[in-house]
Length: 131
Image 1 (tube, rainbow, N blue to C red):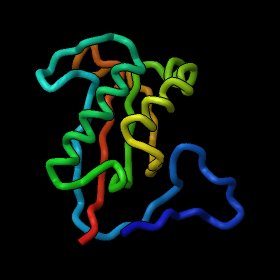
Image 2 (image 1 turned 180 degrees about the vertical axis):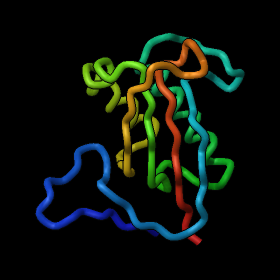
Image 3 (image 1 turned 60 degrees about the vertical axis):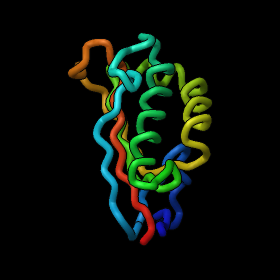
């Protein structure tokens, strides 16, 4: 279905892939934030919002008969990269609880703000489901 692209001689990426080649049905998931199915925030905690956003992604992928293992690309938009870096261990734990040990291509961008004032993170995903 997909192949991780690792240029010869490069140090392996940690927690993401440098590139992925894939074939199949493409699934695009809009930026998901850390609110529940009723569009309500249950917390302002960064890691808890990340966990909820990841769960929202998994729930949306399921609508296309896809799962986290089909993700080939993630883009994370965070309000505070320092908090992202400082809470990396906690974040890694909730990532693995929701996504597992699957590490697609990832990009992290710090932004000035997000549309929803209480949102601390927004994550968008592209997945490819094999034909």
